[in-house]
Length: 142
Length: 74
Image 1 (tube, each protein chain N blue to C red):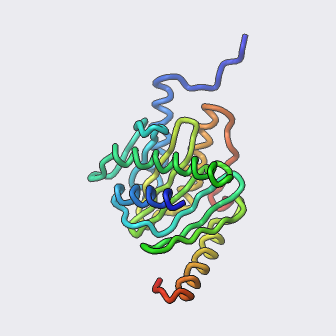
Image 2 (image 1 turned 30 degrees about the vertical axis):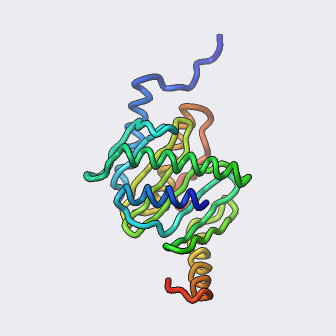
Image 3 (image 1 turned 180 degrees about the horizontal axis):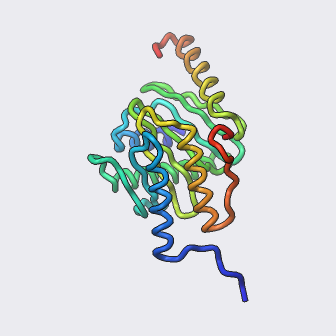
């Protein structure tokens, strides 16, 4: 008999996504987050009032795909995580086997802490869908 | 990369966060740091294990010096 696959099934997966998102939202100055499939389908979301979630999910998925395609085009290694900052906050984006994890932080957000938490979340997703990535024990070690 | 910048700008605008100013892309073998304004994009590539603070500092230094060379305001 083949070993049990390491895949959370159905509603367990949905719970795992919501839990990952909830953990990210606990971080100080984090205002929202999304788990979005590569085609832009929203898997889990919590965004600030006034932000339209569907266009944001579509753009985030497009950005993630463009980063993947761009890396391939430029003969670079695939991207794992990215952040883009503006005057009023930062969008963090992580690539996972199910799509992309997006975190929205305000302008005072602790970038190192969110990056570390995002890496942990991505490792959790990779652990459920494949082999987990190594993540340092503390944000300072990144 | 210009295309990535356009989409990232649109994403930030859609999230209500404003105009894109800087970015970091972490890949398996390298980490890219960006700075931009409405006219220029600067991209620097570092080894993947670079400390983020160091990369930001070096990118900021080069950005400031580049703007000075070009006679532009920061």
